[in-house]
Image (cartoon, rainbow, N blue to C red; front, side, top):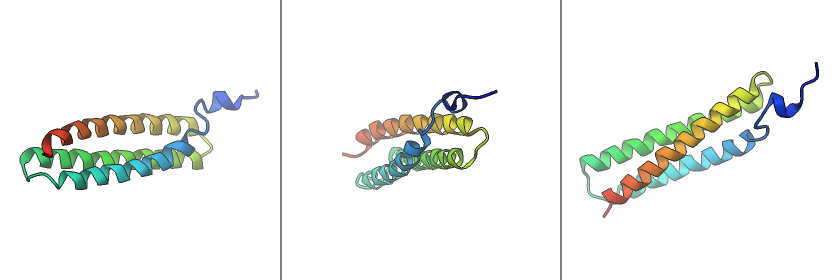
Length: 106
C-alpha cells in the first residue's frame, strides 16, 4: 500500500519553520521580561514576569517537539501537529503577556 507523503505528514516541512521561530520567540519573551523590569516592582509586575517566563518555556517545548518531529521517521506528523499546537498556545500567552505588560509599565 503506497502512502502519499502529504497524507503521512499533513503539515510536512512545517517543523523547519516552527523550530527557528520558536527560538526567536524565546528571545522575544526574554526581551519583554527585561522591559517589564523598567516598571515599578509590584505584585502585578511579578505576575507578568512569571507569565513571560512560562511562555518562554512553552516556546522551548514547541522547539523541542518540532526538532523531534524532524528526527523521527515514525509518527513525525503527530509530533509536528503537537509542536504547532504548542506554538500557537505560546503565541496566545505572549499576546496576553504583552497586553498585561502595557498596563504594568508606565
